[in-house]
Image 1 (cartoon, rainbow, N blue to C red):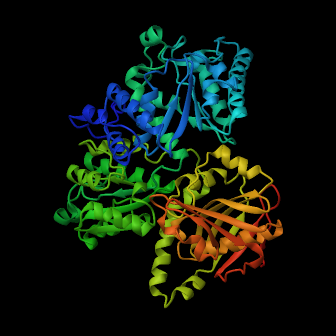
Image 2 (image 1 turned 120 degrees about the vertical axis):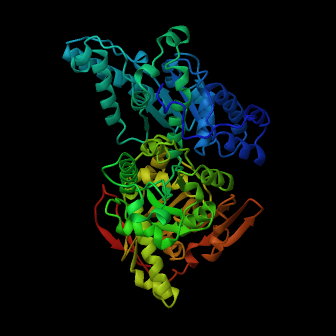
Image 3 (image 1 turned 90 degrees about the vertical axis):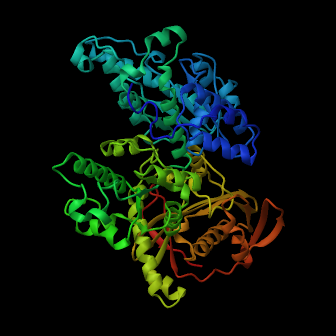
Length: 638
């Protein structure tokens, strides 16, 4: 069995794991915290099933639960609880709705089906080659293409049926290859073989969702990762119509969980690196530059080079890099500056913590420096004691278990799926550079004599535009992952964001901030819903990276200008209390809104458009038309 099937990056469970599962009850803070901790352990399919049943019950009573429907041509009874447990491992409270065996068309096309009546946020179409019209016709190219088209039309009709009943996101699976080969090595090259049909179907399926809000679960890649001989179990299919071997359930459920987490904006975005025996072999403080193992010519040295290559690849796709090492700062930096085989350099690192504090304290400092939550961090550390200390002090930080062989570190980190993506945007690619530019802004702030002169020196421009298809994925990311500067914490799928985008009523705003250090990317999202004669602010969120720059004031100036143009009388804003958004409790009061009503969980505010006087800000506000309209920009006047 492939070494990754058992999720080796997770820690082994305690001896009383089952007893702790039995103690889970209703949706109380204690049960929620315990369930989240239990979801982090590496358990077999049986214990994962037990845990999933308990979590599914708790999730049914929690307000932040999302609903996933599963439609399959196979038996999914053993899978459904595992999905709930695995999603919670990635920060998602999930209630799973199943269907009867092989009721794919009925559940998708009937508006009164169980799935459609359940109003699921996501629906997983878990269909393999046995549930598609893929009849082999070896050597008949034209018929083979017709067969693939027929299978794609079948999936398209299922998608349409599900979309017609609700604004939801469909998760489509690629199809794993079969294990048998009629033609041996050329089987996938002969038109019309099952192998050929599956390859063409998967290619076309990927293309079909490129410009949609639906998601792709690359089950074919997963099957290749664990090995087709491990994936397929003909006896279990014949016996109970199980679509893959029972042993695959934990890793399949984990892949679904990490995909849902990414769709909800919960994917990790910062990799924190230990140094000694993690990026190089040995201890720099004891062994010196010449004594550490790093570089070509030795097995150990090349293993650490491989780690660094993969870390740089993550950086290049937008993952923020940081360092946390028990070391003297100048000693730790000397390897980055002076070792000839060192691939990582200081310019790759957005936050550098080398001192003698405990790892948990350093991780908190890194999160504060980068203005991100500790739940955005992944710690790569070879030391079991350090890993245990962080898991105990900061359970929200992802800390993968590592094997003894450093040659396996990189594969283990990537296999854990902490940095899962459902889309790859320009902002994603540039994220690491944006955080490094923030460090330069911080240095400028220290050198400035006062805040106003600092803000003026940044030469800021706020680029405001309505929602559009080009940036829809990034807008959805921000809506689902922003917790602190978020007035209501409403969460929306990409399909729901698209509905706001295409609505002729109300207002949608995406804001990018550019200054003399570079592009900060999209940093604010606002949704106003029209309730004549007013606009109700359904969503207002901002990235904490741009706090204290008066961006919220500039954003309000722009919203009011749009409201006046639409003859809107008032803006109505709400603040909904959560565990993490206390920083915006006085947001509306500071902006001049009047309090309408309040209690312990929420408050409601109003702003009279006619009486509003624009706030002076050191930011040039520029309105940008949607791409389909024009590429022109204009400065907004007040």
